[in-house]
Amino acid sequence: MKKSFTGKVWKLGDDIDTDIIIPTQFLALESVEAMKKYAFHPLRPELAGLIQPGDIIVAGKNFGCGSSREQAPEIIAALKVSCVIAKSYARIFYRNAFNNGLLLLENNALYDCCNEGDQVAVQLAESRVFLGDKAFPVASIPEDLLQMVEAGGLVPFMRKKNGK
Amino acid sequence: MGYTLTEKIIMKNTGKSSIRAGDLVIVNVDRVMVHDIFTPFVIGKFREMGFEKVWNPDKIVFVYDHLVPTSFIEDFRHHQIGDAFAIEQGINAVHRTDGVCHQLMPELGYVVPGQVTFGTDSHTTTYGAVGAFATGIGYTEMAAIFGTGELWIKVPPTIKFNINGKLPEGVFAKDIILKIIGDIGVDGATYKAMEFGGSTVKELSVAGRMTLCNMAVEAGAKVGVIEPDEKTFAFSGVDGADYQDLKSDGDAHYEKVFEYDASTFAPIVACPSNVDNVKTVEAMSGRKIDQGFIGSCTNGRLEDLEVAANILKGRKIAPYTKLIVTPASRSIYAEAVKKGFIGILVEAGAIVNPPGCGLCCGRSGGIVSDGETVIATNNRNFLGRMGGPKSEIFLASPATVAAAVLEGKIVDPRKYL
Image (cartoon, rainbow over all chains, first blue to last red; front, top):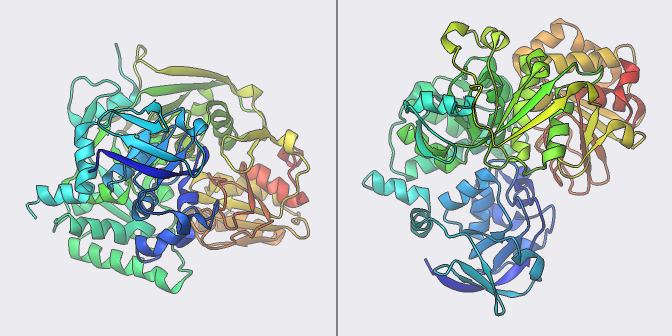
């Protein structure tokens, strides 16, 4: 996985719940690819069409609260955002994200300093993100979790364990 | 130093003689529940991981509830895939039309005190009401459990909620948990265990305790737990003598302790569109509503239907107002018919849905349109949760919902009790 990258910011608020990330009425669609155009539909129906690979979602506290639907992180991963940077995350979403190879970073201050459309640079090796020349610390990610993200999540990890 | 109830359940499961909050442990899973909306995904990931046989077919329960009865042509695919897998693997516990997963798991004895249980739904926390450690996970982790029977967890710190005193008339378990979430916030217990205790909780039925634990996840909690007692043992059909140690020690360490005097509580509503946006019913009195909903894994049980029937008996709901009622399980539905509650609700103007999750998750059975306001007994009032993104959801107890549909506006339920 790339340890340093830059991306354009899409800014979302506090308590972005899993029903906002993907409403239940789209969960019986056959694949995450079919669902991804409905990402964030109740809040910003146009957003999924605007997000480009490599972009970064910056959000407030408790991102991913609500249901256990794993399509939530899968869809964000399918939109190919490089990472989410939020003030904090809900528990089930956090586990699901890493299990699906979606990188989550935590920082309290960036959200209040950045605007949508800004460029944010991520330096994983330094555990810092940059907005212009201003640096924001992020908690370091344990190496085994990073390896799981790098491998693409829990499925490849289990495949390897099963000798496949 | 002693142990909390949550630590004791994990210790019993892992066979460790000592654990502390923050420890990473691998637990042996006693039971898992998968519901229909995620069934194909769990099975797909299971195969992708390279597994062929599940670790133990007797420990797996399938419940079809989100897509029952089916609403779209493609819905049945989920049940077909589930059925085929169950037959292939010898999984016998498949509930196709029996009700909402979180009602069935404790009701049918799949979860009993002291167990470690995981489900693919976030409201799996409900089973803490019978003294189990139970929480929601994603379908990839569920697939890994199907293959291995294990999962890693971090032992959570516990926040204790001591609730003592007599609840005033018109105040129910739902009002208690909304009050608590209003106080600590929707992320107030993230990653933590919420343990509910005190004389008020002892007085609650197992059904009321399920309402408390069900909504622990709305404060971000990993689990909600309540010490099992005689009521629990009778409900679960187990011998209490085997579970005497299943309680927090007097010197257990809590991250925080909240003390509540139940006699000061009042009927509460959670206003759009966050569960911690709570106000008293009195403060919101007069707010127009278009639809009421009584049901869900939070409040679709017999005593919920009874309290609504008592309020609606011999009365009619207001013109231009709808009431949707969904019993949480087949057995609750049958019992409510037998006791006459369903007849009363229907005569008052209610539409009664078959048991399932449809309206709570905005998928079927009375979904609301933009511009409509619903007052509901379920657990989430998120933007667009029950239908249109410009609809509004207020969460309340069954009594508050029943009173509201009588007048077409939020009113204090106590005038009808």
